[in-house]
Length: 456
Ligand code: ADP
Image 1 (tube, rainbow, N blue to C red):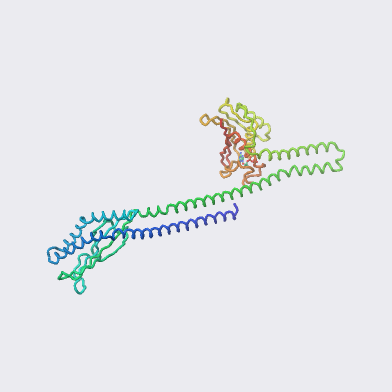
Image 2: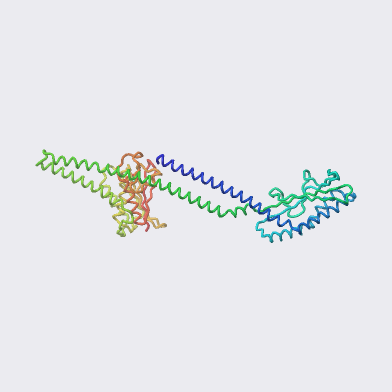
């Protein structure tokens, strides 16, 4: 692939990664924003639930009780821990009623998400007439808060939504002037992440779909680009090959024309006869070349089969023996047929051409020992004809594309073998016309096996 194409692909991939990163960042930001808005909304909704008269009156039960306890404490009838203990035990009494009011409030306000609330006392401080701290019952700096209303969840995942101080002037007290009773309200949004994610689902789905679409489009374009480039290369190769093939007969014809027009040849019938034979041979060669291009480049749907049933073993034997006669080199062709009586329904001429193409390739690409096998697979009901050679073999990469029209393994990789890159294409089209498949197994420098598989 050229440097320009590589840059183009790399650039597209980097841009895609950048776009996805921006997209992910934007989605994350939206998520955070939604989370904040959701928390704010929840806070506002929940405020409506707990800032009601009913809740307030429940709260007053604590307050009044505490004031009563405080009186007893001042008269030294109970101790400080006992006051606190009493405050805690009051929870069991009041919380049931609070939770009921709370649940009703949730329903009334149409709150769809699961939200829990917790009210606790953090500080109870008594001041003297000079507003100095006189006594401390609870100090948030040292003591843990006392849970009074709601659900007692941990503060870790909770959000503080309100802090309040109930200040009470203690008119009847001798030692204390003021009471500071501080409370905190926390809310806990159960499963709120999934709630926010649910709200973002459509956005997420659209993003993922768009992303998949862009990736699909990009890979399609890159694939197309690679295909186009290969096609252009194949075409250039083909033009080079055919020009090369045409050169020899044309230059021979030019020489023969010169010979015939030469005045020394005038009246020399022997020379004329020989020259005409050369012209005839070159003419046939040219015709053959053109026939190859025209006939072998047709698609499977243009092949008109004339199907007949025949025994496959003698058919293959005949092809091999006829082919052997044409061979100039010393080549060993063996055969191994498993089912001698098996019949096939096929077009003898076309199937023969496909097998001959495989045989001549096996010889062309330096096979010296060639084995033709036939077997019938009972299970899959398939005829399998294979041609194995010990030639130069084909790399894994090229195995995938050798059946393409005009494709030839680049001359840089191999010696200069003559051909137009049509043999395997034509064979594959013939096999396809028989509704079969052609497969290759090969190892470089060791050899190849081409198999024609035809269904019964
Ligand atoms: P051609 O032989 O005219 O180049 P083919 O379509 O018959 O065209 O083959 C395509 C390519 O597949 C060839 O260029 C060759 O590199 C490779 N090839 C085909 N058959 C064999 C084989 N038996 N051994 C090694 N290479 C082969």
